[in-house]
Image (cartoon, rainbow, N blue to C red):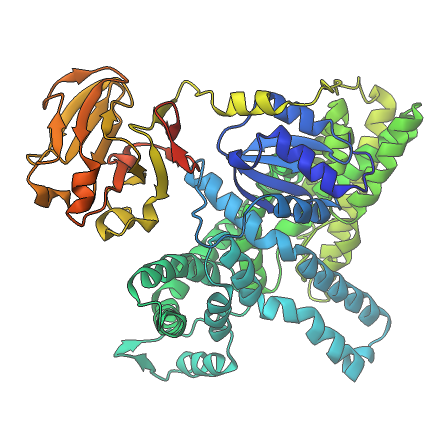
Length: 631
């Protein structure tokens, strides 16, 4: 576990096989240290097996995600993994799992993780400039300083463009359209217009007054822009002729989304982000001991579950509003405390293997990355993790009496970014952070020397590989809150989006698929009751005993046949068993009338369920699963 590995392709294949293969993977993203997978269904054995693989620190399941903690080589593993599955297909709707909060956290992770090191590098550069200016008053007046300074601020100034790139991939929309829209938000021309509005001028768009909100360094406005853009682009793609689509879709997206953002989305979301930031600031200013204790003591617990990206908009809003932020000051102390816990184990441990792993974790902790320390060392022995949290809380409480702030954003707060707390207007800030960090790194070392670091709780995982049959068997096994629905007849499966009838293809009637039948008999796919039979006998509505409502519409426009090719074997209101013959029909007659026998099979009460998983299959048979309904 956590050992070095060079064959990233093999590791990616092993992970994919362990989680159930490509058919079980809905989506995949990565952050600074984790490969994050969204699965149709997780296998309890997969977590243990993946966690024991060489090159993997651990595996965590949270927020509807199967998270594989890899560390600094996660990028290489993700690249290999992305080659094994189709995760970049813009036509494929990635199904969301979990609560609204879980989806928000997953989105923040997917959006910020790919460029967090860019922000971290810019923050470190700002810290270096701060240190140089401490020793040279004249350096700030040089051209060298000016060039390095604007380089360090560039990623933050054009942050909406970074967000456009990553968010467009997450929301499955055109990256170039997203970049064009978000680039307009940071246009110098708009900045000039906003400045005039702020000075009292009135500027309108189609009669509506514009506000002075600017979007450099903003997070939520571009994020919401791209999210809404993803729906608008899909709407336009379905309705604009393919001959003019490449030109008119970008045109309409830009002329709709940019004004909409400036008029509504931007001001509202900016107000929301600022409101959250002000709420935290109120706590930090009026109950600093409580704020320090919570962040310093519990921040690493948040990291365990991979939800730490959720605070990014608030932190960036603080820098944008006030040019400073106390949250990252307390974050740093929490990170330093885990490094201190690892150092305590290094000094105490007799096992060379334990010391070797701990030294590696301590090095990565210096750069603000604590997952190797937490999963590989402190949480593994339990006691050091608790000591680290206690020390982080005490250190942050002591620091709060010095009004600690960061004055430059740190992508990965940690020991190397402490200099971001230096500011001439707040001379005590850096002393508070240094004092809190000293407590955070020394106290766990002392506690571990006195009380020890406990017993190793890591147990050896079953090394036998997950066989293909075992993975597929679990994949096809429904859980207690799920119901599977099989095909009502044999035939060729067609995605619903390709059905030449907009009522069905738009998904307005619910999720589903279509089947081009290869025989003439429709059978019951589950036990249930007939709730509707069309007068022309071409469509039938079924309700399962658990409440799933299924519409089977035999052929397209077959209502015009007045029931001639259809023979009913059941009537409205009757109960039936799975496999009962419901309707016979004459495919040849339908086709001779110039109509298609393509049969949409729709779950009409889709909205009543947490999730409806449509299986990716090419052919249907009576024992073929088509849907899994999650209650």
